[in-house]
Image (tube, rainbow, N blue to C red; front, side, top):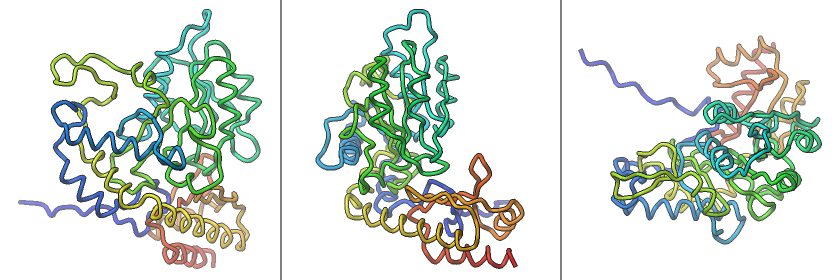
Length: 360
């Protein structure tokens, strides 16, 4: 007997995810290019042209203004981009006088760097954060040595939405001859509308992760890896003798053109005004929620980007989940709410109303 088709997850009560509803134009474009393979650009020429446009669009965001001269490609997500950044830096590293090749990253770095270290056989040196959940610059400086292939900065951390001191970290990397990578997977589509220093225009950034399928409102999967110069991608290239394209710098090989086409369609529809409006609305929602929780006596981490963390007791947290709210915790156990484009003020009011009911 045929079973009823399951329905996709509604976003109505999803408050902790860094994914969101795709823009309608992005959804339609993804369907049109679903079966094309940007992993073989000589065969699938139209999607290859779209990928070049996607990279130009992402580079524009990372340059704050006019299109930047950056290399890159559309990845499956931030994990792949971060793994590739580590791989490129390792392959370009010139030697370490017997020291094991290492990557230095703050404790706030995404877990993809742990995966990268395990897969690529490099040492991951995780350094502490300062009192405001950003990378401790002195700790990073103490951790690097001639074996350091890569220093990592985070521009929009997944737990607290913090932006590391990117220029200072880039300077440390440059002093020891290491590459510098910025993980802006989540924050990259919000940061252009702030005064943060975070990208190629602000510091000696070698590679950068920025995901259209987060705030960019592209369909999943559509991540992004950008590089200041072609050499970073050249270090990743392998021969592909049976394809029309004779080499490949990507990690996954065959890829669906859906993510590429969806990313271009979303950026065409929303850059810059749509993204600016979404970022301002998200920031307002985060500030509103932080104030509401603080007024109720909860300890709240002041939002920097549109992410709210609050010290809500375990019993109340579980009751919110029982009420259907899709929420998660930070590593320290705080409630974590990410104000994505689908998170409306009315949804947050309903959330706070449920919290008040639970507290009574």
